[in-house]
Structure formats: C-alpha cells, structure tokens
Length: 143
Image 1: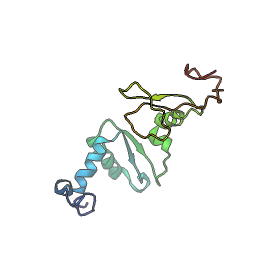
Image 2 (image 1 turned 45 degrees about the vertical axis):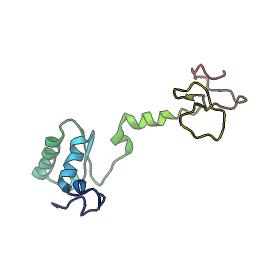
Image 3 (image 1 turned 90 degrees about the vertical axis):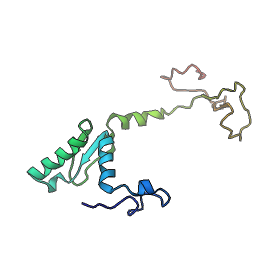
Image 4 (image 1 turned 135 degrees about the vertical axis):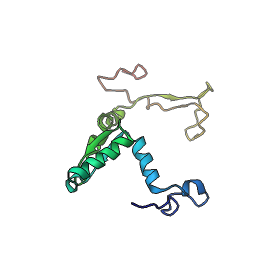
C-alpha cells in the first residue's frame, strides 16, 4: 500500500495545500464510501480468504452499493449503469419538437445569433416541417 499524497501524484493544484496533503488510501476509501456501484475486478486471481477479505473491506466501507464481481475487466456500460443506460438512450426520442428556455423575462428574443442566457429563446422547428411521429402526444407540435 502506498501512503503517497494527492500532491505527490499531482492530483491537487500547488495552491491547494489542504487537498494536496490528503493521502491516497483516504481518497480511495471516500470513493468507495460514496459509490452506488462497486466493481471488484480480478476475482480470478484471488482465492478464498483473499477474495473474502476484499468483499469484507468493500462492504465495511459501503454496505448499500451494488457489488459487481468480474474478471479480466469484463464489463459493459449496461451492467454498470443498469436501467440508467437504457433511460439515457431514450432521452433523444428522435423527433424534433419545440420548447422554450425562458427566464423571468416574458419577452422572447428573436435575434438568431443571441447567446444571452437571460433572454427567452424559442427553439422551434421550421414551420414547414410538421411532426410526423404517430405516437407523439406533445400538444405544441403541429399534427
């Protein structure tokens, strides 16, 4: 085990002495404590007591995280993210739609090159392109 610090590994800026003084095992333990999913890799290289000890250490730091055991790093994003990966694929539903990104100002800015976030900007499809998605239920679309 190493007792290097974050500064030794150049993980912290030279101006942040507090973060630089943190030791690697402390940082790694915090990562395990905060994780939702933990991956215990190289289980093919561990046997009995060694593997049991690894599980015990992980569980003592985080009893609630999903623990996935694997060998040779055989892992897919879906296995790590579970249903989240599928949900992310559905974010882009494939059909264009209109929506407003508005702030407290009720007047819309019509300048196409405006990048001022405090303005309300419409991001509508050109009116010549109607939504053709038969399953679309967005009332702001022209059907």
